[in-house]
Image (cartoon, rainbow, N blue to C red; front, side, top):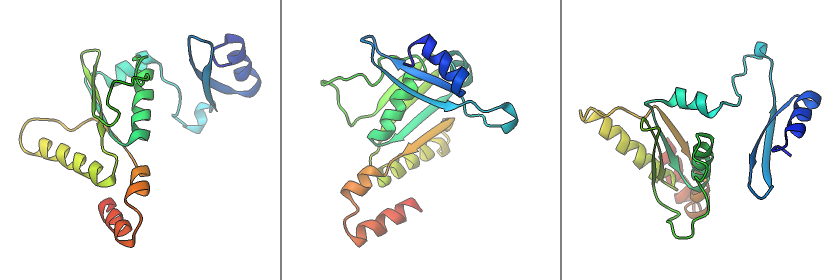
Length: 170
């Protein structure tokens, strides 16, 4: 149980696992872990606290562009950044829509709904046009781009579809 201090301590001591759990009020938890690497390996993948992330992202802009899988990564990132209700089930809200958030009054973290590769390319072009037109806008500090499922499900049936997709990705 990743929400139990004794279990987390045993996982670390006995197996060298750093476990990070998402604890629910009703007792269920989702747990994942990776083996901690010694500093000599130069592996920099590791858990960062909300405070460290806040310091690193101060006055930055992060944009997630993609489909529902990318939206899940966006919500997981928002929860890591302290927005615990991000991604909570809401039957009244739109599923396929952009989401905007300003954290700590300094950091923009946004999600752009773009399920197909051609949609993602268009969002990237829009960002590029806004930045290069002399508007004084800066490019986002980080763009997280994801997709593929919608392309495969909806526009990949014919040779023409596959060729069009390949051309978009170039």
